[in-house]
Image (cartoon, helix red, strand yellow):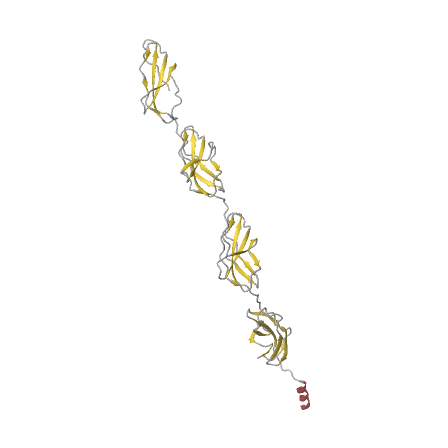
Amino acid sequence: MAWNPPRDDGGSPITNYIVESRLTDKEEWVKLSATVKHTTFKACKLAALKEYVFRISAENQYGIGAPAEHVPIIAKYSFDPPGAPTRVTPSDIAKDAVTLTWFEPDEDGGNPISGYWVEKFDPESDKWIRCNKLPIKDTTFRVKGLPTKKKYSFRVLAENLAGPGKPSVETDPILVKDPIDPPWAPGKPVVRDVGKTSAVLAWTRPEHDGGAKIEGYIIEFQKAGSEEWIRIAEDIPQTEHQLQGLIEKQEYSFRVKAANKAGESEPSEPSEPVVCKERLYAPSAPQWLEVANITKTNADLKWQAPSSDGGSPITNYVVEKRDVRRKAWQSVDTTVKELKYTVTPLNEGSLYVFRVAAENAVGTGEFCELEDAVLAKDTFSKFSAVTRDLQG
């Protein structure tokens, strides 16, 4: 503070000044100094943001004069604390840490910002707790040492010589956890093949891997009539797998889980139920197909049974013919029970080929086709030829 000397020194030179202060909410004056030689004085150790009244008295050899009193004044800097930082954004969340970034305040309060304070809200204590021990010089800070799987809100305060300003808008609660999640469930598995004690299962990859590479798949089965799912295979690298060791004639459903380093997914939708039983196939082709006899309208065919019935009894044979001048095969009979058949009618003078296939409960097998075409015409016995010669 500074002042001017009195206009009247009382006839004797001013020897010193006395400086006193008083809090506005108290009546007691406190002497700060009684030996001030100049017309300036720095009052120290004031209570911040408290309102004071100061008064100054001049003294000469005859005594102390009447004091001059200043209007009340608040003990604070001539500038203000900064405004609130904005747009506090969390990122790079880990199991025990989170990175915060923000924008500096629009107003610095008239004094440069010297640093920032980051605070977290602890719901258990219902208090805001500082996260940094020293002011942060940058507009980013990684908060470490947080308990995993707990939620925290954060806010930031800017500081200058006048002190910390108003806090930023607090963030939404942030769950502190490992950023990697288990994968989503794989697609519904399909049983591509089933045997007496085995099954081939296929499925599609999950739509989302959880942020980490899928390390393998797990297969579980459920027997008909049971609610229990039993793990039968794990660490499967592909989306197809052959299961072994199943029980014959047992009905099964299957489901699949995916796994990454964060854990296992929810199970897929179960497959359609299947029963383990011996594989059945369509029969192999009949053997040794030949034309036993041919006339201008008929052809007598015969053949041998297939070498394999596919695991299911042969129920019938399918006979077809084709005029060599045409590409399409014509069905003759699909209900043949014996190893022979007479094809009729034929067009006299036409060349024909024939083929036969066996059928069982699974379906129709491959055809056995006649190697050479045959001509539809009458054949005469030797006896008929001799008779004709004698008559001639």
